[in-house]
Image (cartoon, rainbow, N blue to C red):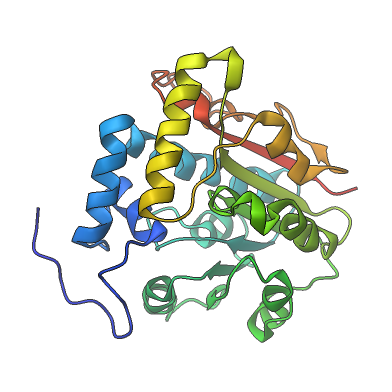
Length: 275
């Protein structure tokens, strides 16, 4: 374990952060001992946690590339974006369309600090600090209004964020508020922890155990059924192949199928189009 570097002003390193735990899983350096303890606890139950984080990042890249090159989407709203890592949305999008625009949103102040530093020289992306639980605050934020044209189709990215909302926070209503604000022809991409239920009793048991750890350590984390996850895109048209394990959503040609470890079937994704 390496010595932690000094945290940016205003960052409380005594409280674990979902963004920093995810950063640890991706092999990043912007995490602290408290975050690593949570991650290591989870890894004792699902040792393939880092592989799940990497699969989610790869899924994001494929989705963004597909939406830019196949659907003509040139503006993205990435909520719960997490810490900057290689292969960010704006990097993938502008590779295929230099005029693409991206707004990153996260409620963790460390994301804002690092994001602003990363994007200081960029003119195609910005980052704001806001909470998905307040969708109107995001939609009405001046930087969102300045960077994105809400009258044209948008790619709404909700990667690994809705499962950090408890049932009592009505994540379906939160998602609906965001989707309702999008014009026709927009797309919504979601990745979410899944409880496979009776189809995989052992996987379901592990999912519930990891859920218990996350809720004890981070206060958030909900593994939901297929039906619950798909309810977030009610009224939209899912793209093929529908709701599937992350690695199975339009894999790159020639890519070897990953080993189907514990998290393979408990972390899934879907992309849907708003009519």
